[in-house]
Picture 1 (cartoon, rainbow, N blue to C red):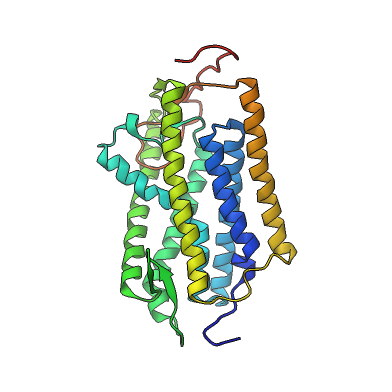
Picture 2: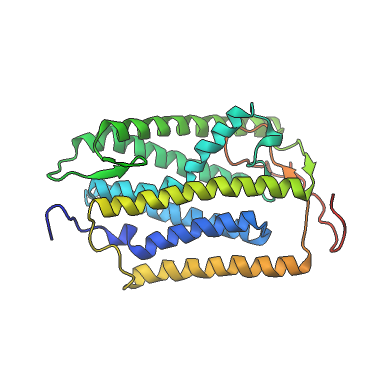
Length: 310
């Protein structure tokens, strides 16, 4: 092995694991874009498990000092990168003066349950906290004899000030958003006001905003895929591009099955004429995504097959 062509950690970001993340992202995006209700929860939960397992492994390997900065940077892109859609979404909210009727993240079929919402925010906050430690403390002090590179819409030094400053700023802002959202959720729950405002809309309006949300998320996912693959290429990382072990093939085949099941469910859902109206979930929330309080949000009645929807 060349000193500047490091062996990668296939257990963390081998080809099968990377493809597992990528296909899981697009399975979730597809389920939401196609309005396959029964698959939205399944893909959401599967992605949460993927993220949680990878992040726990990252923590364990970091404690054992078994990772390079390229390893950690790559895993953070996989573990957290998909959720950078929070940034353009929050900017959209600012531009529309927080008008919930123009917020694509509010027009959803299924809100996060309160329990899942809390665990989801905790995971994202923990990941952001780890990233702050990584960019503030680990990056400048990590000994290296070779140049390493990261992605900032171009090839930049992984230990350079531009990439460090950008990531630190993003993580501080995101932690602020998480904190505000969780605080607001707790206050609303204590006052029993979270999710009590219900605003329905036609299916056409809901589909339009759902498509916008899926488009934003899809664009972010494509950028993160490009960033991950270019990072591995620029740093000439070895041993992470084979599908030749159970550890790589198992996540790959599982996610292929998930993706095919989304398409199968969409076909059968469409054949049944399984339609419903959309509801704005918790329109006053700051955090993304919205959560509902137990028993506070009524699901609109599902129209009968063949019934007209305006």
